[in-house]
Image 1 (cartoon, helix red, strand yellow):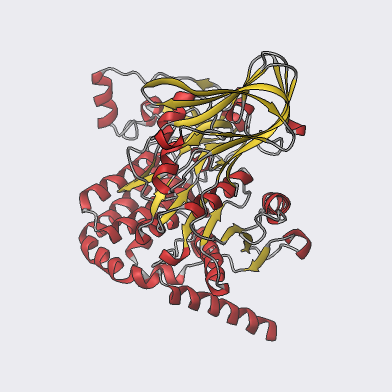
Image 2: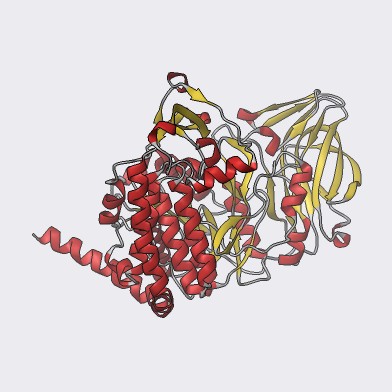
Length: 593
């Protein structure tokens, strides 16, 4: 029996990706994206050693016992097919070369050397020996599946109908209505804004939910799957589902053959504005979080090989795409609302997290999103994570100082204030999280700061901009440091010019030294804002932070122990059951009135 385990896929006009992530060609071949068809002249070539179409040998060898592997190709005409292998540090190999006459139903090409392969990226190329049409293909095996799986996709939505409705429609048409997956995959949409209609739901199961953020939304989806029963795995996904449907299909097949019952799959994140750029393929947490394999170009075979290597095992999988076994769950999400819930969820459940090329989605730049609220969320989640892990005090204090001072010296006073606020809230202990699960009052508190850092459309030519240098002499650095980057200097020393900076997590503060303002600008979207040198606001934020920081020093161990004691209770099934039951009761009571 032929069991398909990986399809050879085409670029899609519906997604942002470019063709080089799927297929490459020479000048004698032409790809027609809308028809999923390639016309190949004699000597025309197609190459499939690409991000979405390589076959990862080591991943399959380690996590499944495939006795054989076959490549099936569909089309019309005579071709030369070359089976190829790329391995890092070793020259490219052609493993086999076969002339085939393609048919619309497909021609099989067994990978005869499968038993001898250990690692590397397996791929193929096609050369036309006459005028040829190529329709597609897939990898399959005669090996029986180890287990049946039922996967529940969960998406959390809050007032983003323009994203979630097309996502539901695409998944319904391409996956849920597919007879091969109808009994294997379902879609549950947790509607935190409670505004999706039955028509918009299509084939998805929509659950109305109070706005408890991603933590409460995704956990509600998992809670529903557990109560329904019969599900083996859950996949948390972004609300725009900006991934190839094939990513989900591959996840299903990998899980069907997995020899590791504790395996979870973390989808990679590619940069939406640079769709070939890898931002993260799994991540680590050590005092703070950092992405693995960041910055690689997924059009490059060499970078694909680097991405394929596992030098560091991921600690957690982000919830833009994370598949995990339901029966291995010991803890649910901590009620962070957003940010950090995915980290703690993985760390507490001890999944064996794997990453695969071609299982991924696209997303916005995190630097664009950085501001007062993200800075608040990051500060408090780092404090809670490290409290649970029992991290020593000094490394945590250094992280907090970096977050605060980075914002303060960048003239981003609202972000600096958010760090202080996050510490205050953390110090209130676990009860704070119970009382602020919807974060309504917190969001108001953060947004009421007078110095908001709101990105908006603007024209840089409207400003007298200075494009400064980061170079400075040693004595200049000491003068800058002693004067707190100019904040201790008289107002007359501050130049009335605006420095240009690309929007990031913090400024090059040496470039701001003795300048009145800075324009933070995100060139791809032409958005930005101006932040100004303000000695009064600087002193006010520094004073408030110092008071709270000293309080944290005095009570550090006591608070840490308190979190270690109560986090298990805030992450168990009964806690979340009480949350959802309580919300349902309140809703029913309001209707009765």
